[in-house]
Length: 385
Image 1 (cartoon, rainbow, N blue to C red):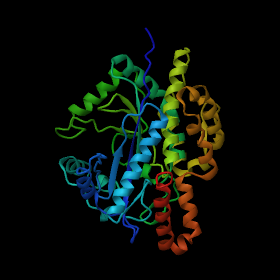
Image 2 (image 1 turned 90 degrees about the horizontal axis):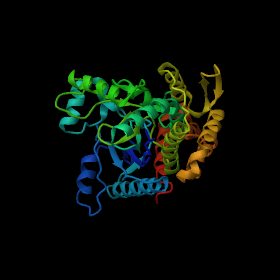
Image 3 (image 1 turned 30 degrees about the horizontal axis):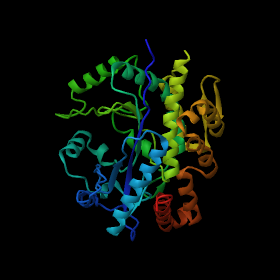
Image 4 (image 1 turned 45 degrees about the vertical axis):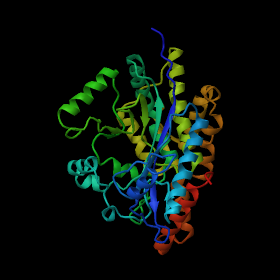
């Protein structure tokens, strides 16, 4: 049997915060933005999210990482310009520094009403913002089986990517002590977190079918409500990486998209050479994910093969060495090696906390949190204007 050659195309979705520049708080305005977008000649196809203070954008299918950068810049520029015309601002971070979920307006629509009816108070707290990266695999059965095989192995790298993306250290005006509080909030939903492994596409579909027949996805909704950190997308022929906090800067977002693609590519290359990456157990990956949530890039993770803690910076050098054979073929070497810049300058969560401390931290909390919002708005526009 020949080895399938997936296209490994890329797509990216980002969820932004809509900010009132005077109060620095979230502002419910997505319905108005969508109405304005529908009148544009070149539509952005803005998508509503659960809260009215959120706006989601999605790229076209990209053939390479250079196109991903073009799409992220195009979308951010257009949304920022639209917000500015309405006297508003846009910020990319996975939690707002001080906004409260119980003060948000819920988006109208059957989809959101059903989610709220089903999940109750858990759904009401979902004032979080994410970034999803799609990697194309193809729609035939052989490609789908291959996608499951690669997903089983790629699960290992999920905590590493989360650490690089962390952008949610604050919740309800408090420094949580975590780098990705979004992960904690999101995992209160069912069918989230690190997935278990599957032996084949058929086994995965049997799981999905059982969930659908038993009402797990709600009434009359054909879309599987499976929100794992990595999953086969229910509509597209892609493997969707959902683990990330949203990256505050364009460079970080492109870096993570390129890294996801490179991980898939190296695992495929190993397979073509009759090798494979070890399939790690769920409890091992979950332990490292917690370390990413808590410490971000400044902690250690466990090398379960060695049975030792390894500083995260060392793990990233090992990852770059692993990915090296595919980077030139993909044309993404500078984008993936931007990992070293993140390690040097800090992820978004680290930079937010530095601003918070600079403006007085807990002793001057209100002013310090407003300064963090200003910082996020400014960084979101970097490389866009």
